[in-house]
Image 1 (spheres, helix red, strand yellow):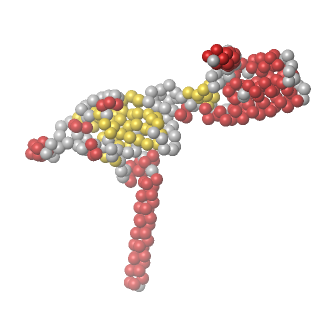
Image 2 (tube, one colour):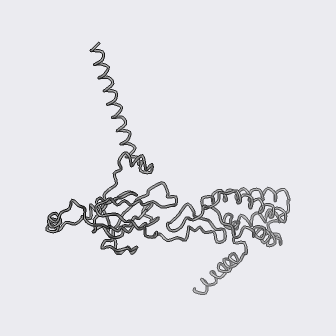
Image 3 (cartoon, one colour):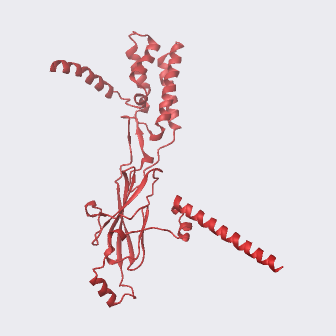
Length: 324
């Protein structure tokens, strides 16, 4: 039984070896099937012709120039359609009694022209992040790959004076997908400057790409981390080391400090990062802050202002008319 299984496996292995040893393990083999190519050769030289093997070799050899081709991943469907049209064109040439020795090189040249007209893949933007927009498809192996960059971005240093506001912007310098993007924040206290996730704990109330601490205290010294995800898949992790400097505010007396010490005052985890609620000035200064909810609030304020203005005008008009 084992010998029978081995006997069946050997031809398959030899066939796979023969395929992988073909020099043009290329776009032709990615976007057409063996049966399609074999059928075209049969149409050129006959169903049982001894020239079938010669035709297959000529077919593959004509496309050797595309063996190292790489394209924008999003252009795969366009290239697949182009190869489908090419196979139909070759079938028409074969039906017209054309020569495969002429037809295959011509088809390969046309495919090279098609590839040069495809939208180019965008370059990776360092230093970090999973950048789907830059994914490339490699014909030599028929696989795709994204940028070879780490998820963890370098630590950014943020220094504020005690009692002031600290703000963090979880923004990357590459294009993010438009759907299902979420942000989560973590904190590693004790003055640690680290990217080791084992030191971080979740900050529950922190949501969105902007977060702030107000007022910043010495207990806030440490590293804040923001993780960007799309549908639970991490895209990037940003780190901010917050260094709080300076003496206590003037208004803080020794009695107040002693009172806080008695109460064992400390910032609670739920209040570590304050959700960012932008003012009207901040909304106008930061166009990216115009979320749907913020746009609704602005529209509501505009409508309220319009109603108030109309009421004032009407009251003035009534007063003027009664005086007349």
